[in-house]
Image (tube, rainbow, N blue to C red; front, side, top):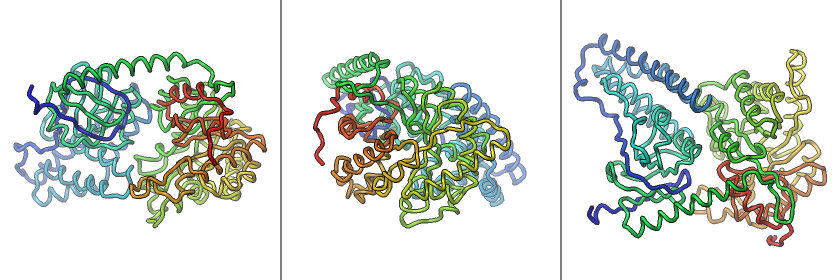
Length: 556
């Protein structure tokens, strides 16, 4: 091994941890086999196309079943989206049109898939951009079937390997043997991709955006993957290797220390009780929360139920999902947030409803949309109420800016209760209702709002953005995004004091609750509950145990 083989590659950290292993490079298979370029007439090419569609559906249904058995119902829904792509009239028409033009079926499929993939990548919405991988996944499957190639074997990969790939499709993620993978390095992908969610669930370090990784890294290269800061060391020098081996040992020791506090009650060093909950958006994150002994769910996002589909989920589908979460939490509190779309979370079948807005974060979103689309809102509320008898459910309304919104939402909830009563369907008649305090307006009238609800949850991400007029994703002004700004601290303190005067509790579910350095400030301000990233539960618990609640650490 020469000096030229030693490389340091950079990317975006997506799943924490440090691991060491030999590279297993997965080469992308998207090219049409040259032996299948010949055009054999429209009838023959169409026949091959529809046979490939049928075979692809068969394979995808098998993957869906595997995901249901080994992962979760939500993972299985990804493959339901793949089936919808195969039935999409626009896709089918485009392929047929290209075959009419005299193109071989493989070429027609590849060009059509590329068109829809590029269309999604061109949208000004991060989530929709990341859905391009689903379209590509379906395309790769069809082309592989048409060319008679078999799928890459991700089950019999070498033990203790580092998987290196351009990207991982949901199909590949479902089939990979996770216990053999030490870390993952990808050239592409997004932080909400299926691969990232699975990596976090299984504690596998993952780095995205490592340019030319599949070209520069060779099978068998020794890799150090630092998922904490996004570095990949290729064939590292002895000194670097020894340093990282020590860090991996330290990482293991730290994890063992955190396991020692797993069952300790969360109290400050001077005895004040702080409830420690988890933020989740899917069943994988619920698994992590349970593994880390979360006392409850402080924020369950429901948007993922509405994504990857052409119409809203039915009441029955939502009911089953909410029931699953509540049953698995076994009586621990579960705060489920009603649909929060708009802003950076655009859902295709609501595009016509939302339309193009100049300022989507200040527009028709969250509770504003739900109050207008009572059909969607009531379906969700009915499902939640029906599920409420299976656990300790609390319902939370997002993006509140005035008392009228709270009153309207509560009225619709009462309508749903009355409907269920008349239908003879059981539900918890005393289900608690709360709101997100994430606008300056809600914080400033928190004394009024506290009289209408059973709890507050402070969403610091939006509260900071709206109060300081700063887009934290804009590098030019991101330096102004400061959770410790006196204005933010005063709004949080005001909200907590007004809540306590009215006998209700306050949690914080924004990113600052998962920030070890900010947690002591939240405790000093009087917060009752912290709801954090599931993987950070024990880290934050350790910080709470070390914190004195009466220590003067805030400058307001």
